[in-house]
Image (cartoon, rainbow, N blue to C red; front, top):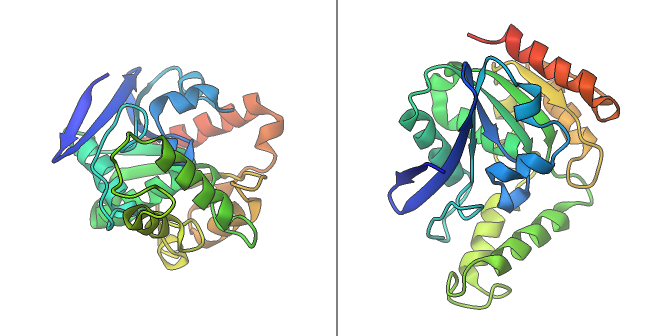
Length: 244
């Protein structure tokens, strides 16, 4: 697996196929890594068999990727990892596809790219995470489970009381909506978006639908889980329509 290095951060990634680039942000919450796509419903390698170059990364401290952990770490650090890899690979224009936590990573990338965000020609917003009235504890519990799995010595104190661990958890999951960006940003987001709403605790349908309502160039496909073949065709058609 090739590696991109940014300072003390090592990002492992995989590439499949050839053609128009699609940058993938995997599911798995804090364990977001390329191999997580193998156990999801719509698999990019199966859906986009021809005409696409797929790039799947392991997020920092997930899969084979590593990075030091600082109290200030948050969505911007993850986005800069991805932007660094995008530039390292020389991607001029490309699409993005994220599932679960993936869309939150992708939207922060778009925000961080600023005027360069027009290089992203499409975003597949696949079962995105988001905050509703009952699920904040789910994300924080998932964060601490991941933290417990990190190598011994990562934190100075036991995970449950370590201030760095608590700070990073708050930075990531202490806000609302999709956590990484606010509603105002999505209202001004010009990137064409295909929204595939989730329908469970971690991927609340109402957040996906609100995203689609706010984003000016979004379309929604409801009930995609009930016909994955048709959903795959919809993803292919959407990306084909927005291939530079």
